[in-house]
Amino acid sequence: MRDALTNPSAGSVRTADPTSRAEMLRRFVHVYWLRPENAFWMTLRSQALSRFELGSPSIDVSCGDGIFTFLHCGGQFSPDFDVFQSVADLEKVRDHHADMFDAVCDGYAPKMIAAPSCRVDVGADMKRSMLMKAGKLNFYGELVEHDNNQPLPFEDDSFETVYCNSAYWVECIDGFLPELSRIVRPGGRVVLQVKLDAMRGYTLSQYESTLGKRFLDIIGRGRLDCWPSLCDRGTSEKRFAKAGLSIVEATPFVTATHSHIWDIGLRPIAPLLVKMTDALSPETRASIKSEWVDLFCELLEPMCDPDLNLLSNLSEPAEIQYVLSC
Ligand SMILES: C[S@@+](CC[C@H](N)C(=O)[O-])C[C@H]1O[C@@H](n2cnc3c(N)ncnc32)[C@H](O)[C@@H]1O
Image (cartoon, rainbow, N blue to C red; front, side, top):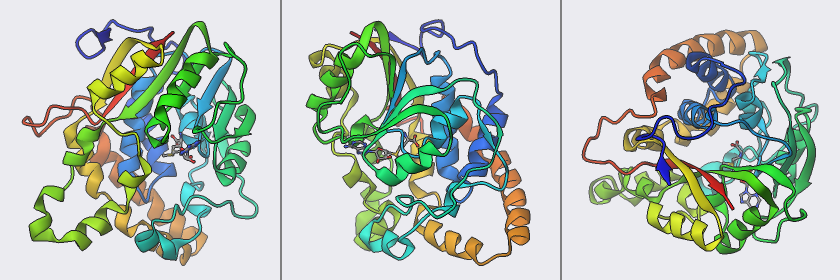
């Protein structure tokens, strides 16, 4: 196994779409503007993924609404589109941890100004609303509703590239990983972007006695409950081996510093921000959004360095990209 940070020449360098980091960040901030901390995390993900060509046939497992992969592949939306225009259950987000994005509003039609440089053959997810949104991108050849706790509905050796950035959401991870190994062709690659449980330490939870449980609940909003297979690096790598997956390259790309900043972010107030922006005229919303995007692009630019670590005592990464082969 080669660690990409210590072996920068490891892995095949992606040749297509030389979009600059600043431009990539701007595209993510436009779409996720009310959650700017997600925009920089996705920029880091996209940079890590840019090391590779997504060879065809390809599958994006747990593709969600497809926006991340669409933008990663060079697609671009009109500045007046963002993910906060098709949300629901805003009242249930704080205390019931509802996913406000699990909804499609009538007439959902993301306006695009550039098509991606490639298409992904299959997108799969367990949420129908997300797949309906993904379908509007005209980016996936086929969309499949599927729960990853069940065997994947694809023949053996179906794909050259299997990409998934949500494996740690799957409860039955020891059933899921061998399924990824089964559907990738000999010589193909499984690319997983995996959060690590070091993230549990990159929060304010150690100060619970001072801040109180309610404070931490409001900040955390149950997100760790969504990640049942979150584990440390060693356990992840043992799971890959057990599933018959060998590590070709491991690229840590999110540091403790990134994770700490992301931990606070605007998560607790996002539903209120959505309500506020909904109350604006389209012209006022667009004008505020434009200033907001400019400001956050400047503020987040230093966050897009995958090596940024202001907390030198915390060295365990928060997310690693693994390129795996059978
Ligand atoms: C954080 S989102 C990421 C979506 C997308 N990959 C992206 O980067 O925007 C996690 C996704 O995993 C999906 N998911 C979670 N558990 C799943 C499961 N057991 N089977 C299939 N999809 C699942 C959710 O529906 C959601 O769309």
